[in-house]
Each structure stands twice: as structure tokens, then as C-alpha cells.
Length: 489
Image (tube, rainbow, N blue to C red; front, side, top):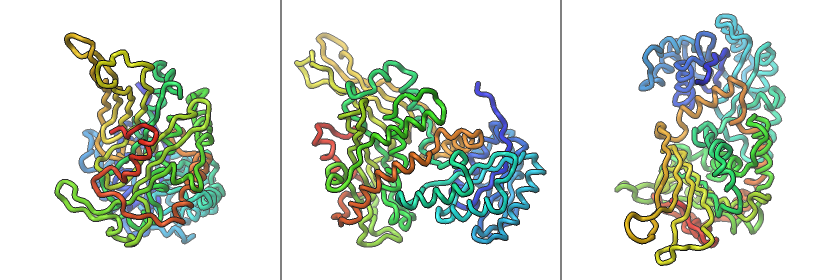
């Protein structure tokens, strides 16, 4: 069994009254509490502009735990470690008061000067907060100081660089934890084990045996109440720049010398550097964009993206992206990595499909062609692995039939589950940044995405071009069909 190591720290959450804190962070911290990673020597400060009291804040924390209470771990006892500080992130006096409370709690709970700051709020305040944390002495303790920030990490490479420089004024790179909840998911972390713990897999993990790789992140929901954010982002920035390119780097990277943060990051960066940059007219050859229109799903009439709140009625923002990525190195030369992501699609699923090459000759030629060998990694809503193979049909003759070898990992349904945040918060408390994004990865991803975004921003697309409840525009099917493939469903 894994040894339970109690964490000693003061966790300060900027945006402590927000949706992320209530739905993800507080339940995740409670899970760490029930497992013994957080015991007596921890405290949490929630900050926001609202004039809440400690008691009211604790009531909200307890409410966020409904349905996940565990016997023997009273939510009230857990919430007693929580404190609230009304805070204006632009006002120096607010930081003076916050510093006094932090020092008081450090003594009360014997926290050894360990500080974790979680910025669960709008990124335009990140630089201001980091600067004040530095100037007001929050990071001048004997213990560790670590900063977790949520995406978006900028809107393009230039803004990401500006954000990074402002953060680096107060925190070293190894103290900045850029969280991507996908990297906390069980089956994403399983990619390394599937590859490097199984010789039957790793020996085939190259262009001699793999035909193509497909990464699908599909959602059935529309933009809902995030229209204003999505108008500034779009699917390319919201999903491809971070989640998808992180997954691609884990699939494509070379085996690290050791399974350490530094070595894994080194190989991920090498993979991203090998990613063929697509720009100019080539964008239209390698990328497809889409925007959902109205449609009927399960008898319910759904509005199109342009009818959503805070969305331009003539919006040119994409809600769907499909692309053919090429990794120009010895292992992957010639193997297309197809990616697709979108909103208001036919199904909610995140999966990776590794399609292997066909056998050199079909010895069973008296029947239809053999089904392909495909290794599917299911990430959500179901977690597990499926290997698609051919076997002999029972009875006379040598007819074949496809079968599936399945491994199912039971997991709560839903994207962005508290469990992903739980793992990543625990990793941060442990000082393990393996499943967080390093600046080198972020900058390379933005450099790649910016080339595509610049072309799209200068071209008006004929939107909407796919109906709600479908799997995106027909051009996405043509993208893979022109290479002789089809999307694995």
C-alpha cells in the first residue's frame, strides 16, 4: 500500500466563493482529509470580494460536500479549518490583512511556513496577485511557496509570455503549477504505464506498426452560460492548445530515462518540438473548423451557437476543431495524429484510438476484409482499455470475427471530476509537478496554435456548418477519408 504522508500547509484560494472552488476544490480537499493526507496541521483561507463571515463560509463549504460525506469524517470538523477574508485583489490593505491572518493561522496550526496559493479566478488578475504576494512578504517564509493557476494561460504566445513574466517576478518556475485537469485523470496518467510497462505495446509503438492515432474530446453540451468567454477563446484555444496537445505529447514522447518530473517534461518538450508547424494556406489542408447550428436532440429543439447569450449573432468563433497533426521525428514520421473536439456533438466521450497497420496479406480471403486492430484508451465517461482483435468463428471453416478485450476502470461519470483535482492538489502539496504544464510546453503549444488562429481570424467562415447532435462538419470526415481512414467511433 502507498504510505499516507500528512501534508502541512496553509492553502489560500483566491476566488473562494466561486463555482470551481465549490464544485471541485472543496470536495477534493475533503477527500484528502478523509484519506489522511490532511489532518490537523492544515488551514484554508478563502478570499473574494463578498463580505462573508467565517461561519457563513464554513456553511458553504459543508454544503459543497453533500452526497460525499464519509462516516467518521464530520464535514463540520473539516470546515473548522476554513477561514474567510473579504479581499480586493487590487488593494494593498487587503493583502496586509490577509498576511496577518496567514501568520496567525501558521502559528495556530503549526504550518511551518508552507504556503499554497490557488488562483481560481479571472487570469487578468494573476499578475497583480503574484506581485502583491511578493511585495507583502507572503513568499518569504521558511517553508515552501507554490502557486496553482487555472487555464487559460494567456490568449496567445505574446500574452502568455507577459503573464509568465509577471508570475516569475514572484515565483520560480518550479514553484508555478499550471493545472490541466485532464492530466489528473486516471487513464491519462495510465498512458505511460500502458506504453512503458508492456513490451508487447512499446515494441509496436512506432511508424512501422501504427497506421494512425486519433484523439477525440467530444461534448454534448453547448457553450451554455460561457458565451462571453468562448467568444474570446473558441475550441482551438480552449481545448487544442492545452488538453489535446498535452495528450499528444504523452502519446508521442520517447521513453524518459527515469520517471521523474524533469525527464518526463524533457521528452514531452521534445515531442512538441517535433510537431510540424502548420501555417498559411496549409492550415486549410490540415485543419477543419466548425460551429454548431440549431438541431433536435432526443426530441428537444436546441439553439445554435449564435443564439447563445453573449454571443455575436454573426460570430466567426469555432466550436469544433479537427486536424491532422504530423510528428516529424524518426519514431512517428508518416503517421498522422488526427484530433477532434467540439461542443453540441452526438456523444460525450474522450478517447484515444491507436489504429495498427493491417497484416501484410489476408490469408482468409474468401470473406470480407479483416477488422483492424485498434487499441482504445477510454478516458471519460467510462474509463478503461479495449483491444480490438480477430479470432476464429466457432464451427467449421476458418471464418474470422472481431472481438474486444476489455479492461474497465470504474470511475464516477463526468468530465473534470473532483478526483482529478484531488490528485493534482496532492501532487502540488508533495512538490510533484509531473502532471502540470511547464512553461516550455505552454510556449511551444501557443506557438503552434497561433499560426492556425491567425489564419482563421482573417477568414470569414460559412457558419454554422454542423447541426447540433451530429459529430461535426462533413469536412472533418473528409480530412481522414482522404488518407484512406475514418474516425473510430
